[in-house]
Image 1 (cartoon, rainbow, N blue to C red):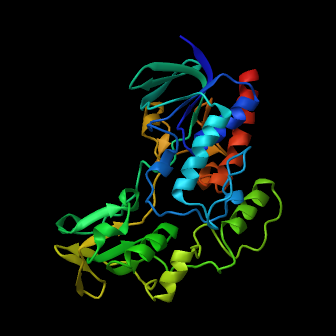
Image 2 (image 1 turned 180 degrees about the vertical axis):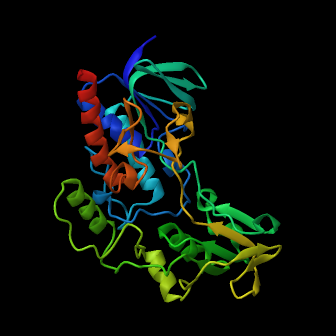
Length: 345
């Protein structure tokens, strides 16, 4: 059987970033993607989603994203860009391929897929978080007869027209979905902490500058803002003017028709949208026996307990801002260097 230098599991922004830097080292590599077409997790996000930085700050390594029609690129604009990015560099991508299990025999990784078995000397997992949405559990949650869905399954506000909707989660997704659902439905926002909004003049550009300085081990500017702060996109700013961005602290339980607040009062809701984030999608690596609390111990992106394995694009534990378009390129470049050096040995 052919033995690859590296196999990358995942063909989204993290996987393609790895491809860009692996090709620089002239390695024999393959990218496995479980989607029908390019785009990774961006294929599943809601229709009106916009990036929170202009195109030049939302670009993959090596090729600047073309200017968008508006200040911030739309979902469709980014999908068109990442499709052309993959075509531009002619990455060796196989799709759709589902990785069922990974094991290591002697010095080789054995990747079991729904199509065939593959071998590689090193392995990069770049599957991200989108396939593993997180929904917190509340007492009597199963008794609620209304609709519950995670933001991963949300597409547009029309299906909630005329309803009373509870939106749970204080990040950018919660704010953006609330902004548009509140135009067609009565809404209530629930957040663990009071939502923090960035000043209108601050967006992802500030956050990416901080990521760059941290990557280069330079002194970062005063940490006034964080990746968790909400960017005041036009839709969010408009919602704020309408007065719909006021949030309540979490409820204590569900009942058949809605939720029970901490003071014991009940409130009816037709639907609940969970904007509560994601956890790392690592099921394909369970055969390696190194997953603890849904994480794998890493030194930057390199696995500590399994030689030859790297994890890219899962969040801060695999590099600062590594789950962002801009940040993942920095961790991918570093990872490719480590892989090339390990193969020489």
